[in-house]
Amino acid sequence: MTVLVFGAAGFVGRRLVSKLMEARVEVIGADIATAGAAISCPFNTVDVSDRDAVAMLVLDVRPKAIVNLAYTTGVAIEADLDRSTRINVNGHVNVLDAARASGVRRVVYSSSIAAYGPSQSVYGHREITESDSCPLEGHNTTYGAMKAFNDFIALRLRTKCDVETCGVRLSIVFGPGRRHGFTTWTSRMLEPAGEDQVTIPIAPDDPLSLVSAGDAARLLALAVNSPAPLPPVLNSGGYRVTARSLANEIARINPRVRFTFSKAPTPPLFVDRVSGALAEHVLGFRQQPLPAALRAEMARAVR
Ligand SMILES: NC(=O)c1ccc[n+]([C@@H]2O[C@H](COP(=O)([O-])OP(=O)(O)OC[C@H]3O[C@@H](n4cnc5c(N)ncnc54)[C@H](O)[C@@H]3O)[C@@H](O)[C@H]2O)c1
Image (cartoon, rainbow, N blue to C red):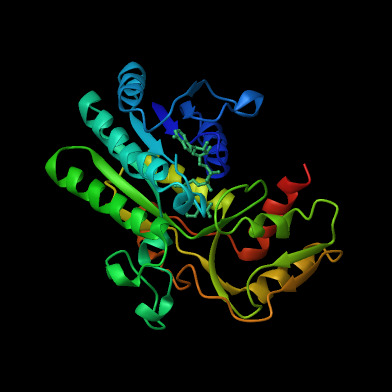
């Protein structure tokens, strides 16, 4: 089976391409960035906001499934709302419409826990499930509202025709090599790059919901290959840790590294109690224990 991956040159995309290739899936990558030698599959330079180019590529490849990870993230969204809407919203529509036109039956795309809004207080102390949603006024980033809108668009298409869409609502993904988004500092914690002092821009007791890049890629690959039907959205779930306990776990593995935190609690950007029960039920997916995931990601950082 052939899988076409948009956003293949990105942080999550590269890990997914490797994971699919390890499983002997034929992968075709697509991205606006020229991946150079770092991507090991056939690669197409495509702007996902170019509707005709996306349609032509999908028609040409006729994949069994598409994964769309192409996105603008972090502060870059507000900095150029017009361009980021064309990528994050129109690009999503372009991929879905191209799938429908070419008879592709499954589209898996990266949603985010940001779709639940920035604050756990909306949900109280319980775990958030896929049937929860954030009121419009609860959002404080365009990123989160765009992710919720992406899920809405996909659900509409799914109910109208026979393209099975699945938005994987990833928690904050940690691993080496992260260069974009709100939480690039999680990469710096794992790859201090010569400096032994890493500054974390949140307070030590601020809670997080985390998934490793390896586990995120494994979950996306499981969704792509699933013989069972997929639900419209699926949480990755996440380790619920404070910034301090994450730092302590990392320091146990790399005792040289020292962390400094923001003095005051910071306004939350993401929810922090996210249930992964549905992904476990549908795909048999469970995260590795946190220390094992940290060791695996840190080993990649020094390679
Ligand atoms: N990293 C995380 O913590 C995290 C958490 C939750 C959800 N996600 C989602 O996962 C997806 C991938 O995130 P990432 O961390 O790998 O980000 P990334 O920025 O590393 O990767 C995104 C990729 O999309 C490509 N892209 C951007 N504009 C494009 C365009 N016009 N046409 C084609 N390709 C384009 C970029 O070149 C990049 O390779 C995004 O949808 C993101 O919102 C990431």
